[in-house]
Image 1: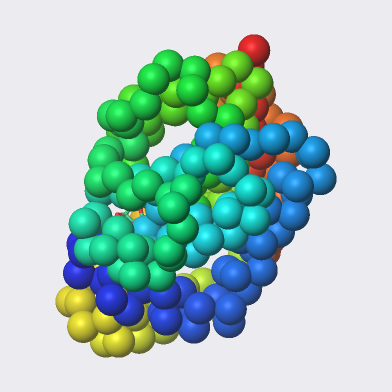
Image 2: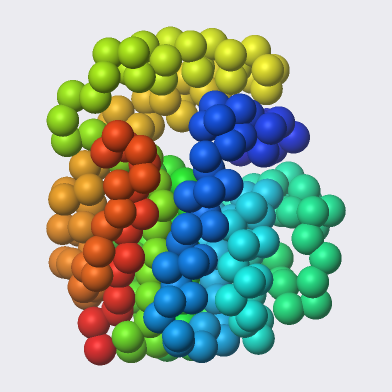
Length: 220
Ligand SMILES: C[S@@+](CC[C@H](N)C(=O)[O-])C[C@H]1O[C@@H](n2cnc3c(N)ncnc32)[C@H](O)[C@@H]1O
């Protein structure tokens, strides 16, 4: 499905969020900069066309790996980013080609709710992160409170209709809308992270309790 929507992904993302997605990704990098930690080895997991990868380069890593299962998304990322520190790898979140405890920071931008096996992916993320390493996730979570009717109508009817039309897909944007309604709330999600050996540093509500950034650390 992600191969199918890859060519229109960036354009529609910016359109449906009124370009706020750009600001949300930048905010993650400015938060990480404040920590004054050297993030030498970074993995941007479920990297897609690389919008978050591009921002992460501002942390001045020695190496950054963009992982994704979609070949097409990675091909578009290759056209977008030219930087010798970047390596593109087609791989599954649950099976990453890295040594144990070798990565300082893993980010996942709008990807984790698509992972088929969340627990296996967390075990793998935990394996490759250094003790004390950071895991930062920005995602659309199921809202804890019933969000506004206008937003629900927009998200369940208008966005899938326009998304399918503009991406020329029959169902992809219905799936994307349904996957948010069927995903976890932030407390449910962070509960799973904690069970998998992470501590919650903080979560930031970017937009009406739906778009949140979650900052976690591997328990050292
Ligand atoms: C909505 S896009 C997000 C792209 C980008 N991170 C961003 O911030 O816009 C989700 C990406 O997750 C990838 N993905 C889904 N399941 C995955 C998995 N199990 N392992 C690795 N990548 C996965 C998809 O191929 C897709 O490119």
